[in-house]
Length: 202
Ligand code: MN
Image (cartoon, rainbow, N blue to C red; front, side):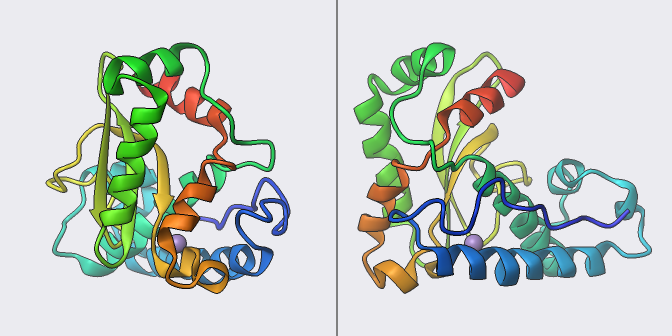
C-alpha cells in the first residue's frame, strides 16, 4: 500500500506569526508531497511496499539514495507536523519534564543544547530529541533527510521531537536568520504530543 501525504492537523496559517502560512503551504504541498511521491516510486513493486515506514528506516540501505532521502523526508515531516500546534509552546509537564531535567539538568539547558544542535547543523538537516530505552533523553543532529532510526547515523534512540532546519522551512519569512526561526519554534512545540511519543517509546 502506498504512503499517503497526511493532512495537517491545523490550518496553514495556524502557526503564525511564528511560522508563516505560505511557508507551511509550500512545505506541505510541494516538499512533503514530493518526498511522499518519490518514496512510493522507490518502493513500488518491491518487498518494501508491505513494510511500515519505521521498518524501512531501521533497515535502510544507506547507499540507496532515493529511498534514504525520500523515506527520511516522508517520515521526518509526518513527525514535524504532529509535534507543532497553534496551542503549543510553554513547558513540558509530568514524566517528560522529569526526564528532561534528569537528562539535561533543566528545561533551559535542554533548549540551549537543542538550539545549538539546530543552529550549528551546516547546510540542510534536522535536530532531534531522542529517547533511549529506560527514558534517557539525547539531542543530536542529522544531515539532509537522515533520521535517528536509520543505521549508522550516529544518533541513536527514538526521535520524539524534531526541527527541520532546511532553508525551505524558514527562508521566506526569516531569510538567513535561522536562529530567529529556532527561537520561535519553541512557541509552537506541541509538548502533549512529544510527551505521548516519549511515553510510547521510552
Ligand atoms: Mn522540510
